[in-house]
Image 1 (cartoon, rainbow, N blue to C red):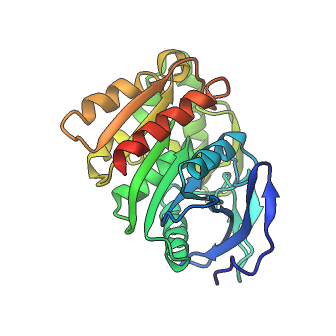
Image 2: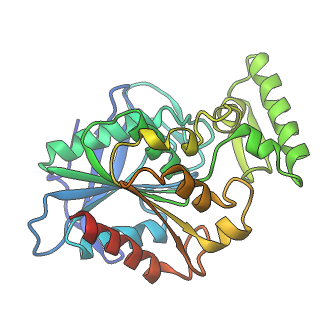
Length: 298
């Protein structure tokens, strides 16, 4: 069920480690990449979670995050959730539609529990999560539902999934209403897995049921509605371009979080100057931000 030590060591750009896998309680096999720092006795590992349409090996941002973890003396585990890539086929004992076109946010709880269990079996005593974009929403939601064993969380640029907020967008509300109506009609006709081409809030291909789960569930997955239920030290990070000039589900998110956490000393929010959603021009500043926060937590 769990494999790691039997795999040969391979190189992922500047990362050296091994391919690993775990199987969730509901039977989904997931893969990842585990890298250890040189000359370190740290018992901490960071589970690194991709965003929508992503995977554990395709993001230079997440590889940079993994390198930052290694520089700080901790191990890094880049993982797939069942929502990896646009579409994939389950490699477990039964066929399943997987990928971002078919995922639900709630199912990520089982994915993260599977990876936390894996790290425990590997002997790690301390577990953190770093997650980007939709992955950060999944991790925040899962942690609010009391996943056991995680003690630190870094959320990079999570979008707010809030139906009313998206409907209030002055330029895109008509498009969003059209997508909602189409998804609702398809699901009512039993066509939950019918694939829609959507333009807002993110241009993508997505099933009707998944569109409703992510964007038509009210405030269920809006982290502002459950931020106080995340019981561990958390660093919220955004690029200044997305919170100052970005779309409605990012606009001023840092200020809204700051207001929500003003009575919670465990949470902290930072905005990286000259950074977009992928921090392309601000990777060093992002690395310093994460490292400085970790230094306080140790």
